[in-house]
Length: 246
Image (cartoon, rainbow, N blue to C red; front, side):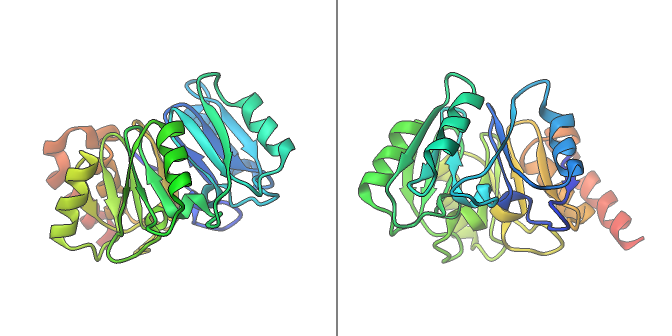
C-alpha cells in the first residue's frame, strides 16, 4: 500500500521528491526518517539521489522526469546538473532548458508515454520535453487549473486528478493519456495531488495526513499492493471508511 511520510513536518511529499520507474530524487536537509522511508522501499530496485535544484529543496516543483529523462530549469547550476548526471542511471538523459515558467514540476505532469502541459509554455520547451522524455505532449487544464503538475498525478497504471474535475473532462483526459483516472484528494482533502504525493508503477508515497479512504483510492488507481486486484476496491473502500469512522 501507499506509504505515509513527512518532510520536516510538511505533508507535501511531492514538493520535496521526484519518483519515476528508474530513479528517485529527494531534497537534501530533511530528517533521516524521510530518506529512510524512501530507501527502505526503493534502494534495492532504483537509486535514491539526494539533490538540490537552483539551490532549492523544492525539487519536485522544479523538475519533470520519467524513466527516459529528467528536465531541469535554466536556474539549475552546473554543479547540480553534473551531480544529477553522475548519480542517475546511464540511460536517463538530463537536460537543462530555458523556460520562463521555471517550476517545471507544476506546469508538466507525465508518465513514460504522455505528458500534460501548461498552455503558456514555450513551443521549444514542449519539443524538448517530447524529445527528452519520449512522450506525446498535450496542452490541457485540470478542472480549469493551468498548473497540471500540481493538480494531477499519473503513472503507466492510472492516475488521480483534482476532485472538481467533471466527468466529461475526466473521460477526455483518460482517453488522451490512455490510463484510468479518478478524481480524488490526498492529505485529508487537499486538492494538490501532485504536491501531496509521488508514485511510480509499483509504489507510492503520500503525506501522513492522508486518510485510510484516500490511501485505498491511491492503492486501487495506481494498482499498488492489494489495489492491484480491481475487484477488491469496494471491499477495501468499505473497510477503510469504517476504519476512518472508528
